Length: 187
Image (cartoon, rainbow, N blue to C red; front, side, top):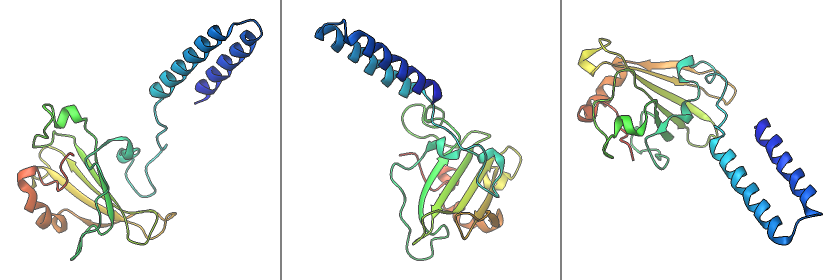
């Protein structure tokens, strides 16, 4: 971001220098070029990722919101005992080309996939639940080698703690065995 600001200031300084000597046509060309360079810089400047994982979560999920988001719109709470109660978003550490090479999602997920479901609890304004699925060959062949773990917290500044894992999750996720145990498909 510092380089972007420095470049923008340099372009503005050049524009100011030329305004005294340049014609209106030249000024318009300089401004257009400056706008194109600024747009190019904004596109190439990566979004700043959080330095570490949210408190209490493993380091390998730091910056997960920069991963591929499976759902186009937030998933609203479901009535009748939603185990991940809240408004949810689901992310995967794979690219769209990897999991949907022909435009349609393919299953199973590749080895090394990490799927994260975050939920903002009703009436709250912070992420209160993180459910993580990790695919590692040989971990659990009966569950297609997925390892499940779920974390919760009760305040925005609180640390996440484990509330459930593996066996507790299997029953529900077995319902979507045909799409590799992940409820949310790529939109």
